[in-house]
Structures are given as C-alpha cells and as structure tokens.
View 1: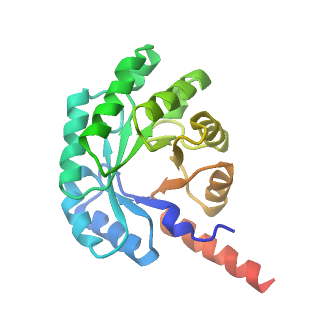
View 2: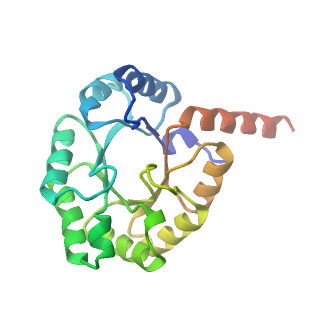
Length: 226
C-alpha cells in the first residue's frame, strides 16, 4: 500500500462550468483530506489561496490550457500573474503544434521563459501524450528537462486519451531521473491510481480525489482485518 496517498494527489477543478462554490468545495476537500495541491482556474487563485491558508497545500493553475498554442508572452503573463497572487504550481501545456512541426528550439524556449518568469514555483509540462508518437514523447521530455521544468505530465484531461501505465513508464524512463512524472487524465479509482504510482508516477492529478482516497482507506482497512 502507498503510505501517504493524499499528499501525492493534486485535487483538480478545471471544468469550464465549475462555479465559485465548486472551487471552494474542492479547496475544503483538499484541507479535509490533506491533498498535496489544489488546481483551480486562474480567475480563482485569490479565493483558493485564502481557502487553504495555514496549511501545507499548494495552489496550482494551468497555463496555456488546454491546447498549448498560445504565444510564449501570453503563457509567461498567465504564469507570472498566478504566481504573484500566490499560486505555487504551474502546469503548462507544451506547444504541441510546434513540437510536431519539429521546431524544437521554439518549444524549449516556450517552457524556459515560463520557468524563468516564475522562480520559486513548481513547473510541470503537460505533453498531451495521446497526440504524440513515442519519439515525440521522448523529445518533449528532453526539451522540458533542458528548459528547467521539474515534472512532465501526461495529459490535460481534455483530449481523447489520458494517463496510461505505458506512458508513465515511458516518460519515467525518458526523463532518466532528471525530472519527475505527473499522471493526469481519466484517473477515477484507487486501482488505476495504484497502477500508475507503481509504474513510476510521482504525483496524480484528478478530480476524483475524494473517491480515490476513500477507496484507498477502505482497502487499507480490509488488509488490516485479514
């Protein structure tokens, strides 16, 4: 069993129809269960920071979401404003189109400029693996690491495919200890979460965090009573 699952989970509320009440509920759940981070739309950073004040929970925001095709200046502005308001995690979408066009120096610069603009903040690069070949995934990992990102991340959760055990293993091997891996996209239960962690995921991004932790606690209880 995973010793302290909640701290590995980044509780997420990024649905376009989510209300302020939804965001505050998710923040309250993060406090109750002790999740490692809560990810909210950038417009709710102030409310989220206030809601988790006095805890070790980090507030995170998506940048360049969900397609990654914004200009670098726009991504930098998004990240810098969120960091200035108290966000401590930035998950930016890689420029998928530039990557698939082979314009690797531009992809690296895109990530690097966001990292440089937000010192003291954790940076993850969302690869959106369902759109990429194996060679492109490996290249994306190299570019993210070279640009200074601490994590690569499988998915936004808005594409056709999400996190898979195979992708997590591949990304883990590709970063070769120079960065960590966040699995995200379609993670809805403890069994899937456990498989992804065992494959090498260091963090889990999901909106089903409460369900997953309750299943984990139930499994732990059953194991003790056997």
